[in-house]
Length: 104
Image 1: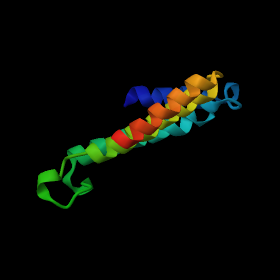
Image 2 (image 1 turned 60 degrees about the vertical axis):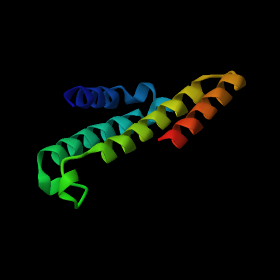
Image 3 (image 1 turned 90 degrees about the vertical axis):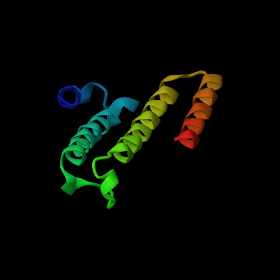
Image 4 (image 1 turned 180 degrees about the horizontal axis):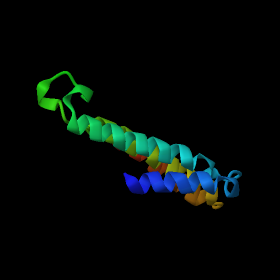
């Protein structure tokens, strides 16, 4: 989690250099990742922060990480589509993103 926090700080410091690129949303994704990791640690360590009412699932944080994985993967698909100029490859990436959403 410390690595994500350091990456977020560096992304904010360097933000003016990539503000006009598809990477302009990177600090938001990194902040979401830091918050997600923190919430995952809280859910795992403290029963009061559980997302489920059943005692059996009290320390499970799979839902948080699955949503985070979907969110960050779609962002990286977005970056790939914006940086690639070949229309054929863009379509392949879009199909891959669609299949990924269906599989998730």
